[in-house]
Length: 196
Image 1 (cartoon, rainbow, N blue to C red):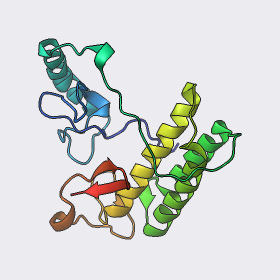
Image 2: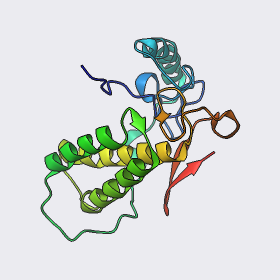
Image 3: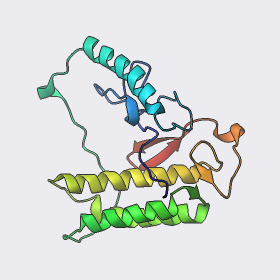
Image 4: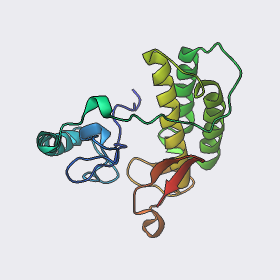
């Protein structure tokens, strides 16, 4: 018996009408970070968030103007990761290695050195994956998982305290003065930046 990651504590930060920062995107339930359950969403608590904000999200969708799909502009995600020059890529191998790395270095208990090592290794893999154009779900999944893994590792490094499900052995106590807020990561042209 061991702990497993079977849910996320959200990621998309919607407003009280479930609108995300991207135009015409609504978010609720597991994907949303509403703050309803603070730093630790236990077991079935996400059902409450899904029911309450699911209803709000449905009402927002019902009253919103339907977007004109033909005229919608879909932004192209650009990364500042240097190209690798390699053409053959085994995404299954990268994903298996990524899962093992995240469990070992960014798992239940965290410290500075393994978190730093995780970011370095993920950055290395990103140089071989993020510059590729995939036409299949496994490739997109690999790129998405590397992006989320980097965000998690970087956020865990920035949060030098223990709160909710985030436990830093090198910072075992909560630090309300510095960290009683969410760490938001924003994509910029020059790379990821934390926002207080």
